[in-house]
Image (cartoon, rainbow, N blue to C red; front, side, top):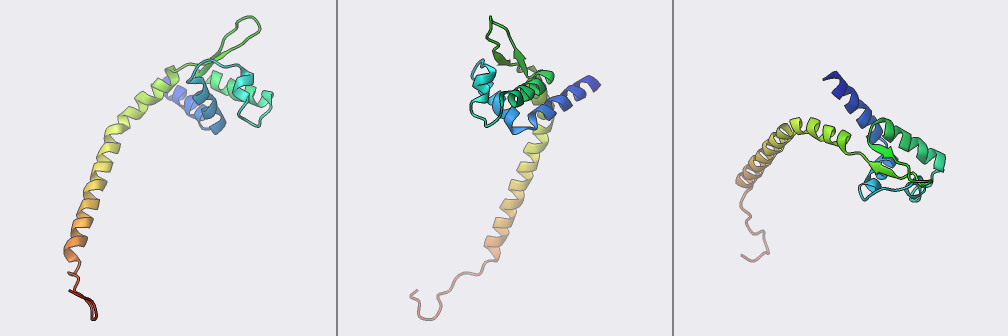
Length: 126
């Protein structure tokens, strides 16, 4: 279990940065070069490369080699581990939302039953 927790920590740390999340979002659509990944950002290529190294260390991205072209591709395994870890909380979250919905329903019912019936004020038609 310790190695899974350690891997989760590394994965969450990599996902903590919005630029890295945007890079992963781009890679969902297929392989891309560092230049292609850098296009939407106002970052230098070395800065994008640093983000890619963090993603590679987390196992989220791998870089291939085809002649001079080094395409990056998404590796989904660490994301699956995050999904499995999060699944254990899904039932709790669902129950919490169900309880909140019940509570709000009770508040609405109480509010409706305690509101006085509106009687026309002077000058209003009935």
